[in-house]
Image (cartoon, rainbow, N blue to C red; front, side, top):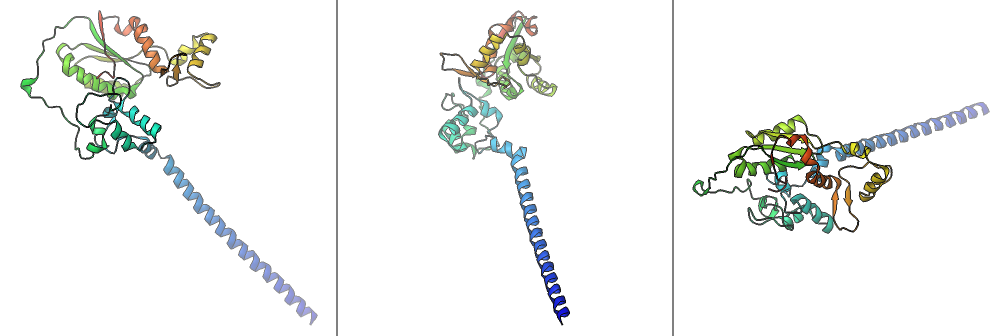
Amino acid sequence: MRKVRLEIVVMTFFLSWVIYFVMQLRIIGSTISNVHDKTEFILREDKRIQSPSLVEKKNAIDCGCPHICDEISLSKSSTKISCRERIQFLMKRYHSLEEEACEAAGQSEPFQDTDEMKPCPIECNPQFCKDMVEKPILEIPADDLPMPTFERYDGVVIATKVLWSNDKAMLKQMFCLLSAAYNRFVNYDLVVFTTLPWTVEEIEDLQMSVAPAKLIVVLEGPSLQEHIATMTEDEKSFLFHRCNVTKNEDITWFHRCHEEGSHLINNLGYSWQSEFRAYHIWTHAAIQEYKYMMWIDSDAM
């Protein structure tokens, strides 16, 4: 009798452990499943957040009119600031929504003279651009168009300078207007000096936009690192201080630099182009075959 009771106790104890073990396995399995589901969700969210197309879309500015408020329109500028820069300033300074900033920076009529407060063309003003199918076209009757007679001189080159190939759209606009108003009558060579190199495809694309005029894109000189390598320690210290370069940080053309006692702050690339245009350009090999140089700022038109 005792033996039977003992066996029952042992069986009961064993079954209890089996049931407990099975329950624990179910709990662990459920936990793993939840963790797996959450991990998949996090990975999906991470991929969504890191997706280049979504990031680009988030950071892009089109004023709610992507069909006409394009790179060329956003690059249009007053004497001091471009359309895009004005919008970014308003969004950052006053926490404005993008379309609010675009409206504040946008013109209300086509082909208005730009000013610092409203450098954006009408195709980037949400009040008007959402109902627009295409950009405004300045139409002038053919009889009203003057046909000037320009005298062409030998040994003339038209030169300009940019930091990098991202300025190509702005150059296309400038050269288009220059060609329509003047260079199609005289067909002078064009030289674009650049600080950072372009690809062959980018150069050919710009050349096609000005044909039949001859255009070349040339590096204006050594890289920034090569410039730094030739400087003394005192010169480096002076430059790094002005450009607020921290220890163990590599200086770039995009560092914003200032002159003590001045309220003006410009990126290093812009400051360098001023020195290049004032001094280094006159001995550059790209213009040595010419007698005369006509300089036009890339954002002048």
